[in-house]
Length: 247
Ligand SMILES: Cc1cc2nc3c(=O)[nH]c(=O)nc-3n(C[C@H](O)[C@H](O)[C@H](O)COP(=O)(O)OP(=O)(O)OC[C@H]3O[C@@H](n4cnc5c(N)ncnc54)[C@H](O)[C@@H]3O)c2cc1C
Image 1 (cartoon, rainbow, N blue to C red):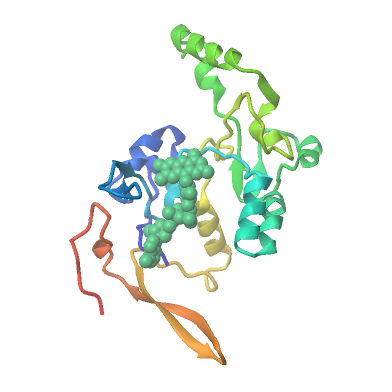
Image 2 (cartoon, protein in one colour):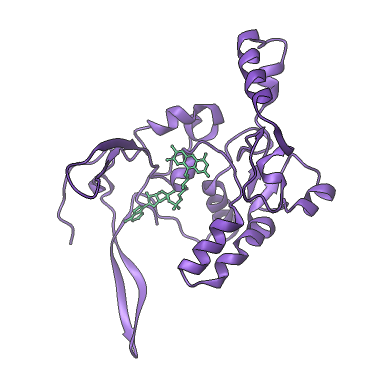
């Protein structure tokens, strides 16, 4: 169930249209966040882009694929008192990533994942380097950036299995597939739905308005949500009709 729409268009598929995607009225949650210091009025109010669509913000994000640092996963596991957090790195390798830019014979020793649903690849450098698109000024800027800092090993921030604290210049790896389209959670949901149409039923434009719970013994257990299908009531979408009373 997702409060957002089923959105599948150029904005959600062509990587370079990501800026358009941020403003696509079908999915943008157009709200601002006020940051309050400990006392006094808000000192910064900023636009906070988020996507409401099948696949969530991954339908509009900047496609940058950075593997989480061990430090982050370990801290999260400790704070949440959940040791499963520590195995998340392996989960990324075993189940999620499908690396398209390093052959698996080499990459599997470097903790890259193969066979998952999230395709990862280098940005399309041919756009920049092809004779038809050659822009000397752009190349000049790019080479200045590249040579300004030492490159990281393998020129990829994800190339070091223990990448905590890696610093330097590197290519930014994108979540895109072999046809150069965006790769996202949406694709995974759609592919799973195709294989198991009876076990994964998709319901978009449907907002959960209440978490339903029951008690077993002394435990409170969530067993479902109450759906509301009048989507434009989701208050922070540009399609909002304003506040609505829900049952
Ligand atoms: C513009 C932008 C650029 C970004 N760039 C990057 C990047 O380059 N690399 C990167 O790693 N990350 C990036 N991110 C962040 C990344 O996309 C998000 O952190 C990630 O998608 C969050 O996933 P999520 O499932 O927690 O939430 P979301 O992706 O926000 O999904 C939440 C979903 O829940 C739905 N929902 C909310 N409330 C309800 C309700 N009551 N009932 C039913 N459905 C509901 C929403 O409609 C939405 O579809 C970017 C994000 C944005 C917005």
